[in-house]
Image (tube, rainbow, N blue to C red; front, side):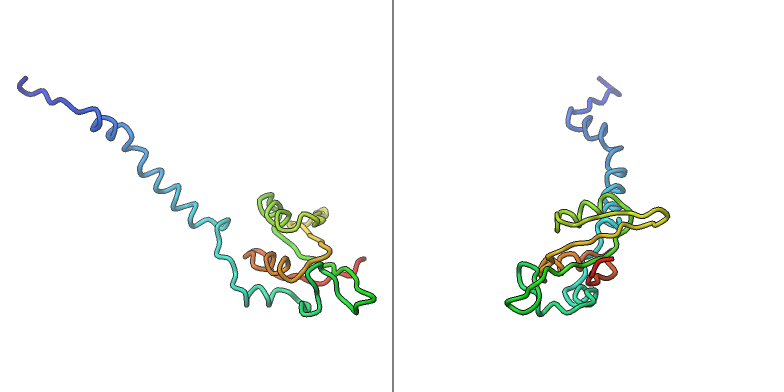
Length: 136
């Protein structure tokens, strides 16, 4: 058996799948650097995105005196991407999300936003601001 080298089964398997190592490494690196996996904003950053006072809002999203509380409504925009739309709707299923012709973003309107829910939305890196909504 001079000149014949036998390759063990485990060595053959590792050689066979070696070509997958670099593409897999590149794939996971790209995923880690993807804008989809951005750093979530800090609590202070998120708080600054909300343009109205949260202190009077109760946990049901109501504001006002005890005998005349009203539901608070809010509005914000998100990029026109399905994944972002699904993400915000998973936080607040009652959101109305729509896109007008010619716009490159979704407009989202919610009602009954309590401070915890509003902060969860504001912490998303693609949310620029959340305004109180009084209707049109």
